[in-house]
Length: 298
Length: 234
Image 1 (tube, each protein chain N blue to C red):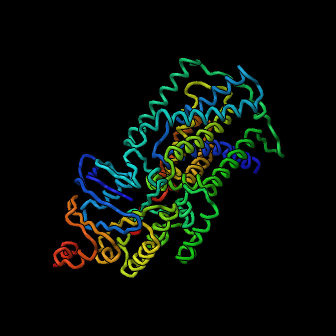
Image 2: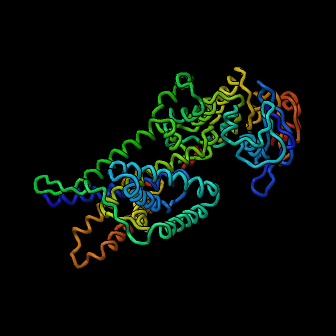
Image 3: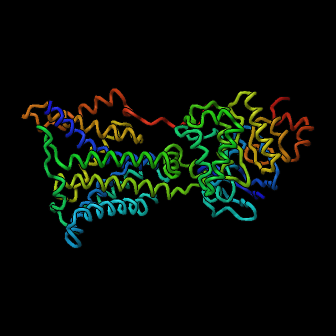
């Protein structure tokens, strides 16, 4: 029983991280139809900023965390302004290629300007304290991760449902042109979407840094790949789907670690993606694929 | 109030409207009539700023050439588009709130929403329901109400009766008539000729991107040949 609880907590912790990343991708995709593969580099920018702040300013972990969040938001908004806005109304393939291009440019900039090697950031020590509840052992990171994700999702839902800007963002995900015809500034809606996406990337960055303890130029690649898979499983463009896909992917990963014999440990990813493929055979558009906007009932 | 001069509208490389000139005076209801593909929706799209055009569109004396889609709405041009294009996943109330997104008088916005709920009790009963669950007629009422929530100077109505049952059409035209009586300036694109003529102060007949005829509604109503051209009934 204790073992099961332990694994459920592990699944929640992994799932929370994937859910945050997937949500960041889904927000931008639902409004712009853009799969932002440069999302990983926003996470990496957050990671490098943690190093820079602790090396140049202060080692206070809270300052480092807030700094990383701000840098992630600013990077995301800046990328929208410089790279994605000029191709906003272009063919979706142009946006996708732009995202790949931006991702490569940023990775190479990190490589050239910082270091090709992993750089250690040790400020988040307090997230790795073990806590024992009965015979179940968890870390402060797992609690922080799950609670922060729950708070972030709740705040995001409230923002999208209660604020006029949130309603405009939901409307933009259904019919962007019609939102412009309502007088709502397209640039502002898209910029806020990127800011929210950047904030979620920054939050995920803190968890990944706490777990890995170092940042390198390809730091964000694997997490974003997982987030992309979570979005596809949940239904691309659906915010609820992104969260569901994230937690489901976390559960499948932990499930595989538990079920697979140790000698098959190296094939964990293959089994995970095998299950993902089966889910897509069952629901080709993802579990909660968003409805197609038909606009009327003619 | 609205003046189109030598307007050409383009869909990519294709010229859909070939240099038409139209004037709408304040408080007037002007109808653009014509068969499918005549260029009616293209004209309205150009005014709203969502279609490429050449020529001039002046609204209240100002040239709209450099004005963005959003700023045209802020200047007082509201569009109730063809196909209604309500935000189906948003509630009825949220659709109306989006319509008033550029207004800052929150109390007046709430009062206007209540006004629409009183005018159309069905919308009021379903205020918290997804707009996509409304019937076609209810969606059309919501589209017009959403457009009016911005307190526009001119209302562009694109095929408001399209796909609606005759009884529902009557309700829609009754609403447009009420709007006209209240002094609202309206540019109406419609295929439902008799009702459109009944409402219009002035009529332009579009055919293959050209204005083939124009005049007040009496001229059209009394000219058998024109009516035959409009209705297709000879």
